Amino acid sequence: MATDYDTPRKTDDELTEESIEELKARRAEAQSGQVDVDEAELAETLELPGADLSGEELTVRVLPKQADEFTCSRCFLVHHRTQLAKGEGVTAVCSECA
Picture 1: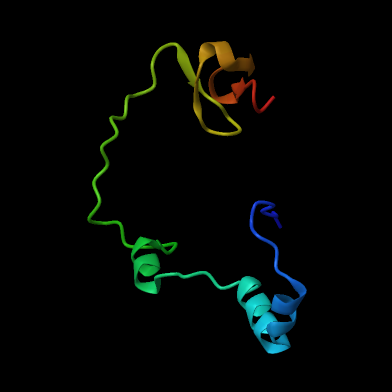
Picture 2: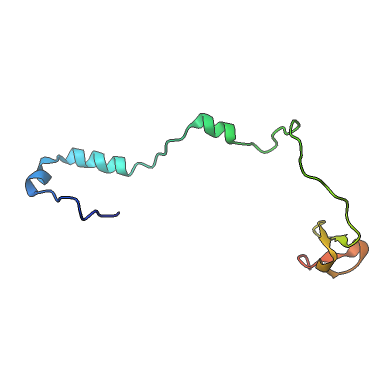
């Protein structure tokens, strides 16, 4: 915990004036782990697995595999031919899977 050394210090009389209950209440408030969460806002932004996305449209343009690309037989991703580690055609393996 940071200490502010510029604040005026309390005298012994002021320290004894504070009751033990008041000090305990302050400590309990400071150690409270509760966070203010708006449950309605949280529920709106939460997406559950298997949610219905039938109304969503994709905005990604998909290109067919080019002549200088291959499909890895292990990860099934399309890579440029510079990523080819071994094999050809249906047995091609990319450098990440090799």
